[in-house]
Length: 264
Image 1 (cartoon, rainbow, N blue to C red):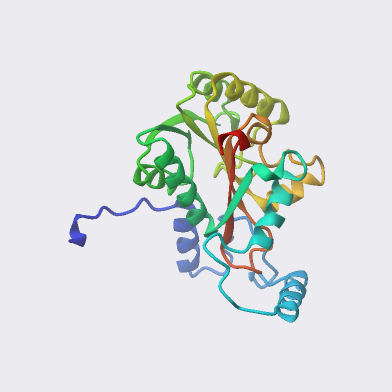
Image 2: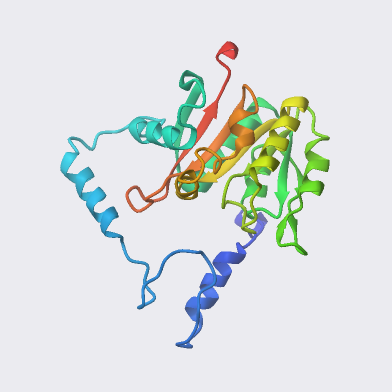
């Protein structure tokens, strides 16, 4: 039976990590995932993380089952980090996923059930797991231009040419600060333009964002890091939010669904 399965597309970053690990040279430099390493080439557990882990251990009173939506306290903290007081929190529903891919799979299947065979527009390029997740959720994948190789920035004109042509039946997958694999980010002015376009067309935005990047960027301007478009565009959007201090709860992630209360 399993001979019918197709090999998954390899993530180029993880391929690079494997090649780095296999390289015997001592002077090698890892240009893969941008995480801190000490002079021994080790990513240590930070003292602040160890202290936070100890606090959780000391204050824990039970290991009982949390229920199908996961840790509600954790979810509430993620919502505060991602959205603050920008919207009515009674319109938010949050569930925990098994890592970023798990959270995105939950969101994709919700969207696929709500809009079977619906069109979802994904950036080119994006992370390779996004396409099969959308296809397996009964969504029809389309693309919008994102990266300009000449400027090493966002191809905003090409992106908006597609975004402006969306309809109220379409879904668009957006990347918040530091989430697109190219490292290219939209400016505040560009997010405002995306938000205005989505508000006009009624297309449904889904945003992927890294909370660690969100937290850092919020030091300069609150909520800009998330994606101004998804937060302010209107009544519906979904957010897949990766938590900071991942070491505390390994590979846990919140999938937030924001809905208009009038829709029940």
